[in-house]
Image (cartoon, rainbow, N blue to C red):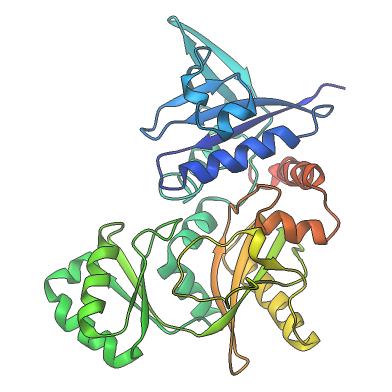
Length: 357
């Protein structure tokens, strides 16, 4: 039986370039080779697409694009090709592919842009489509959808670029509505760059200006003192939620003002919760997944406040996929080894392709 030709796309121009490389290297190392033929496409920080025939180790250490066997490549938007076009010494060739695993996060990567190209190409791909990817990336859209579905989030306000000339007045209005302290974020960012904490009016204005350096929309949220819970959701028609984990370091409690990226090293599974709270968290994660139109997989971040209120924080449609990342560790708790997880994510994409194309 012919192997399934799976293209892994990694890198990208966003700030999450290095995170993408780390995930991609481990995914490529763990794809079952008896079932899949792997084709690697890397995108440099400047946006150049390259067919990469080298080792995953070169991806992991960032030297992949220096490999002399790399050639220019692109995914054709023409569904006639259904593959990758490579260009070498003026010669053009097409490598047919059956499925794409786009391990890309951040702006111009995991925000629906690559998904739009793949939709045009007619090639199945792992993960959510254009709208869900864009809505989960844009924190203001996530908030609006959650509000519409009666899923609680931190109290929030949006500032757009059109309001910059009235920034002092807008910040005063937000302070009146939310009260200090607050967390200020670029609406569209896959990382925590541009995110900061404000305890007074002066800090709020500075934080908003900083956030505007990363995006043309800024989300201001009421600071929530809470435990940070994590859920892995996967599937299509009937998505399944993992046990609930908690980001918890033995040396310090979780702090929402610490904007470092949480890893599986900080994850406790299962979280120490009552059965009712655990069930509510799982139901909320699945409800949010469905409301935003997610497919395949997502990491769902939740807050549990001191008074027992459950709030949705954010959803990542392309979570970290290193073996020790949060999503794979939660899936491992469900019984999926790393190679089994990669296999089932690709299988889901192929099996559900006829619903899109």
